[in-house]
Amino acid sequence: MKFFTKEIKIAITAIIAVIIIYVGVILLKGLKIFNTDAEYIVSMEDVTGISVSSDVLVNGLKIGYVKSIRYNKQNQGIYLSLSVNPSFEIPTGTTVFVSKELLGSSKLNLELGRPSNPPIAPGDTLYGTESNDLMAAVGDMMPQIEEMLPKIDSILTSLNALASDPALAATLHNLEYTTNSLRTTTDEVNRLMRSDVPQLLASANHVMNNAETLTATLNDIDIAGIAQTANQTLTNANQAVGRLNTAMNSRDNTLGLLLNDKTLALRLDTTVINASLLLEDLRLHPKRYVHFSIFGKKNK
Image (cartoon, rainbow, N blue to C red; front, side, top):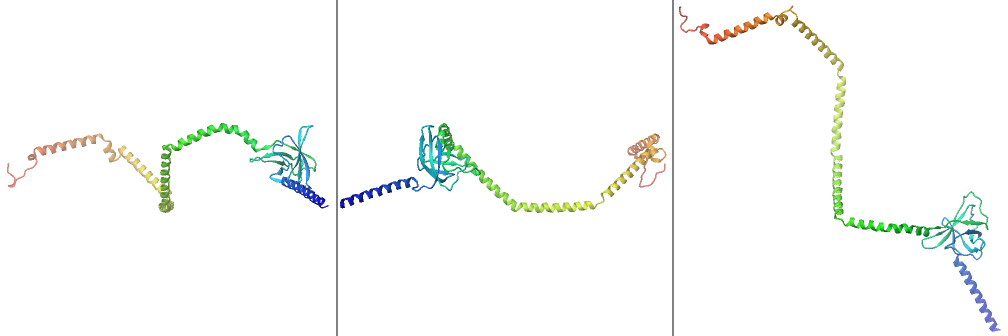
């Protein structure tokens, strides 16, 4: 009887151990013992990286997990059973795709339809689309990257040659000198703006004030009256010149006779000539015209 009791204890212990292991495995896979989630079926052609207990995500939010995966020989399709939180409604038009992360883990993602669409009833079938595999995209880019590597190497070699070129150091030195010059120029400009420019502006304001005063003075001058007086003066001058021309061309007055009588002109010329001859004879023979003596005049 004691032996039977011992065997029963061993059996009960073994059963409890199996139950604990089973429950532990289920919990480690993320499955639920008492499942109350809604179940959906997904038809896909490629489930690479997806396994039982893989996460089901919507925009990064976990809403369930993959409960089972089975293969249909008739249509050679793969069907996944999804266990989804019953509080999450999946609208009609939702598609499923596999996304593969850089570390190699794969997740099942739902691309939801329009929110206005009616929800899919649990047990209905969703359809998968082309995998959104980041690693596959990187693999497609590898040939292009390999083609770019020689060019990148050539560019790096050129950059190294350029960096070791003394001309670059000289250019940088000149650039530093130019920068210092610009800094000095900026300081001078700032100094001018603080000291000289205000004085120039004050002088300019003074000049503008003087110009305004001069303009006001010019406005007070009777320009029209001055112009009228000048016109009257010019008219009088023109009239005087006209009268002078008339007098010079007329024989009715002395000035006209003097200017227009040729006989008088000839007489004046003859008189001048005779006067010149008389003066010359006086210079050559002064005794003919002047007698001077301290003893008085001699009797002839």
